[in-house]
Image 1: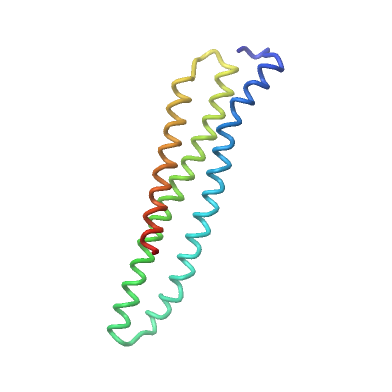
Image 2: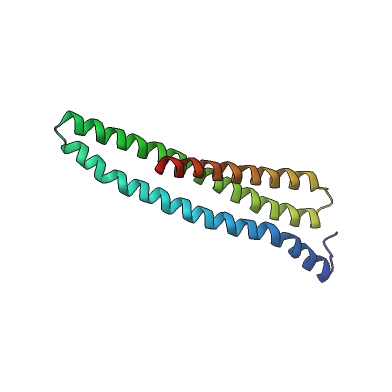
Length: 139
């Protein structure tokens, strides 16, 4: 395509971009769930930290320390899932940009578009796996 594309060409290009945009909406919903879950982890850890600060019994301190270590581990997995999901969303957005650039530039960006899309899916898979590990730890 060239810069003087017909309206049909632009409409077709927008149709091609709809799939990645739906994926982007799914990633955004996933980010919302992950952020809420991380917030709950932090909210549960704060009272434990206050209890630890005022605990005088060694057994109680050990129990609270252990529980806080589990919360910290869960938070690390949740942070990883959030980071990977965010990267996935950014890569999907780049895919959409590449589709438009490919349509209006003379360069063939098919391989780059495919590589970025696969990278996005891999990040999403890794994020979901990290989320799964966190859920397993929580239960």
